[in-house]
Image 1 (cartoon, protein in one colour):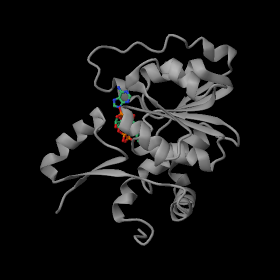
Image 2 (tube, rainbow, N blue to C red; image 1 turned 60 degrees about the vertical axis):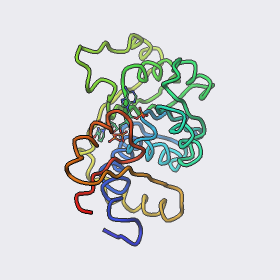
Image 3 (spheres, rainbow, N blue to C red; image 1 turned 90 degrees about the vertical axis):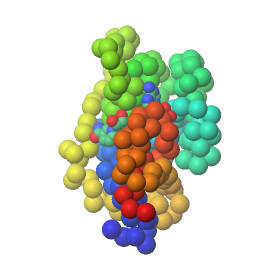
Image 4 (cartoon, protein in one colour; image 1 turned 120 degrees about the vertical axis):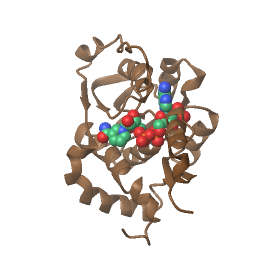
Length: 224
Ligand SMILES: NC(=O)c1ccc[n+]([C@@H]2O[C@H](COP(=O)([O-])OP(=O)(O)OC[C@H]3O[C@@H](n4cnc5c(N)ncnc54)[C@H](OP(=O)(O)O)[C@@H]3O)[C@@H](O)[C@H]2O)c1
């Protein structure tokens, strides 16, 4: 680890698996191209906050993020450089997305699934690509979760939906490390982390992450 570039814990987040997930999803899965309009859900979280900024570096013309609550919405705009932000807890996801991306979206980076996936399919432009990274809205569901009811739109819009696991994209790690190091040192890739102290608080930290108490990567520091 080069700790002159970033503190060691950054290698657990933006410079580690988290950042590589965002990079692989945007490059190999969604194939972000110059001029694309990109929508990212879970955008104030570890993967999402990095994904939005990488989309910009890859040439996206507009980057829209969704997160829970006014403070996270503010941070998307002011700290992570999103062009527009949605507070999904305010409701009317479709309406907010239409306002944030009036011409529709080309790429959706999905961390949430459910209502967000439905809204994104509705807003996709022709030949749009959806990288399915996660579906956190349903991980704790106790009943089977209904799928988006608008999948038929994928036909006329010629959409591609593709799930992926970062573990299959390890070959990108050296390329990503080099590019991310450059972006960080030039101030074009910012990262945040929420650090909880002590192994005894690890379970609480995990549950808080599921509830959205974190911005950026949720970490547990084992020693004081
Ligand atoms: N495919 C892969 O290889 C891979 C690798 C790593 C992670 N992932 C996936 O990527 C996603 C993000 O992971 P992460 O580690 O970066 O976590 P994270 O985004 O840092 O933390 C989870 C966030 O999910 C949001 N959330 C929780 N319940 C939600 C709901 N019902 N609707 C909308 N948002 C909700 C919360 O933010 P709000 O306050 O905004 O609600 C919370 O902060 C997860 O789905 C994870 O499983 C996939």
